[in-house]
Length: 238
Ligand code: ADP
Ligand code: MG
Image (cartoon, rainbow, N blue to C red; front, side, top):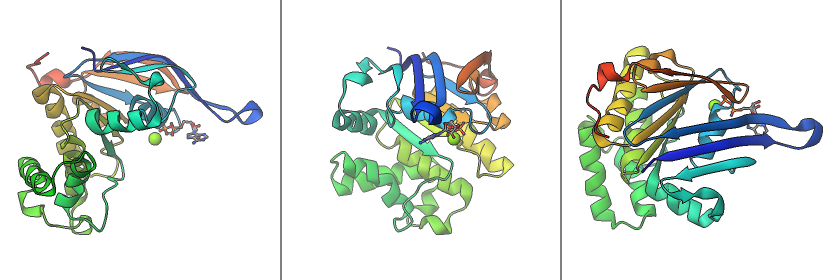
């Protein structure tokens, strides 16, 4: 089954003279195991498109299908359940809760999904350890480096084992080496765990981890090309 189908999607903010066409007639499909990069300058509609794919924002026109669910027919509670179960989000600014430790941040989606606290804690520890943060489990975000914070955020996005990972400028606040580490990690998540990963960014370093690269300009996809994904992940399990 396809992970995501975006069909003729547009988003217009505001009305009349003040209307902004942020996304115009975008169509694309993403399969499980694929990592897709959507590149474009600031203001080109990247966050708007990703928010619609993630069902945080309803399109003005067109349809978004997640797995086999047509999201338009779902109400807000059903969409919240769908996101909790099927979609992990990663943001430029990490969005960690500053009063919670790394482990507690990663536990949040599990607790929201009704998992018992003990079990949630164990799973969070296992995943953080796997992502190289075994020594940082009880650290607060303020005591972590940028790369560590983003890995905690990636663990939080992965903890419910969602089929889809959406990342908005995930390397923008990272130095070159950590940015590369985070990019490689996202690439491995796609090819080793058969998840669909969509990254929006203007960071050209991400070109090497993507399977396909789209260019977005003024809300329109104007170009599709192959990325360097096969250099990093030669084996695809789809
Ligand atoms: P990007 O993420 O590529 O920088 P955005 O999706 O944030 O682009 O924005 C695309 C366009 O939509 C921009 O012109 C922006 O000013 C406008 N825009 C974004 N969010 C809103 C909003 N909530 N209300 C009105 N206009 C918006
Ligand atoms: Mg943006």
